Image (cartoon, rainbow, N blue to C red; front, side, top):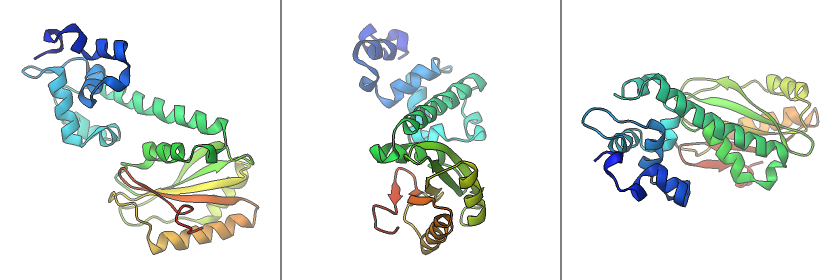
Length: 224
């Protein structure tokens, strides 16, 4: 059944306007972006199939161009719209983290990093540079590596902290395997960076390990 064949009150756009975006299912939300289906498959069915293929919104919004190109019906315009949605979410969270101390919203920090790192196919080490009031200055993805190894140079982190005039930092890296459990190497790296940054009076507030749908905090585990 196409959207036009549904009763007016059951159509995604009308439901959203009447009851709010939270009232829509995942396929209905995606259908609003896709707008049209393909021959033999209405947009709601297409949206459900796309979400099933990727396992939900998180993986879909971080999908590589080649992955999307393989789906019939998702052309350049729709890929651009999906990219725009995730970028708006990133910028909205960044603005809120810039306006208030990060400790006022620790879950927002985790959400922000999930959007940036959660579904990358390779390991990335990033640093959130914060001002003296612990408000976000900038997130920098500083080092990238293979699936199992990333080389992180404390000297480069210290140099950029001084350049950003940071008073504190939050370290972060992703585990492409999806499992967010810190390794012994992660613990050693954290202590090395903490010692190096302490020499220039920059505090390490946390180190967050990003998996798929999970974020582990060193501070919450007492590892800092």
